[in-house]
Image (cartoon, rainbow, N blue to C red; front, side):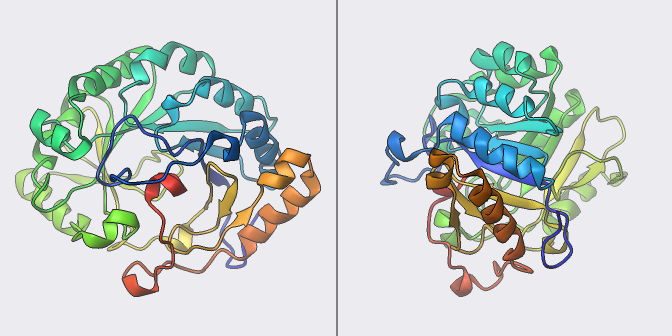
Length: 321
């Protein structure tokens, strides 16, 4: 189904918890108020919403958090979503710490694509950012995911004075392994409002300086707005999601569903439509109408370049990463 600007909306990001087993400065700053579990959608309620979403053409789902794997039975939800006739793909975004533990059941549930948040492969820098010494566990999970047959992407946010040079070692993961190493511009949401954005345009030029043969990779890598490049001799690709300096609103194909059942047309603005009560009462007609409404009120573009106009005040973990 298309929105009021003619964009095909076929993708939904679903946050299943605001809890995280890493206190990352980007999404889980100290002092965040966690939502009571009674307010969070059950898997059955999520599946009820997704069933109606599929009827409207939304057939791709991304499971996020917080950290989705801290919630018991994540694989069960993935299997439930794949059980909806018309679902084309279910993917998962995780910090990777618990991924190795749950890989067998996730794979059995149908998961074949996983995104791992990884802001450095330097042990000290990783611990400074996340607050935990879990880098080896994450890298082990990454390798095990590849071995089991999953397509792996890593997501990195670069920050000046923190991990701005981490890309030099991170891209070497794509040299050694068939993965997509991706760099995301930090959006001015939550703690991101107080940070200087490291431009992907600048980063691409720095990488090209070291690897002048880097060329655009035209192969489709997923459902999102990333632009990919390939470097001769590398097994994987390098991707860039440039929300600030490469606005891609004209092709945005997604809605977001928070862990408490709020449907969000755009990350930038605070407007939401609650589906929780209707999911709990089984009012599928109202759910469907509200999803349709969310599509039609999806704004033409975000305003991240004018921070004072960004109306979303919550942290990323409260919205869904």
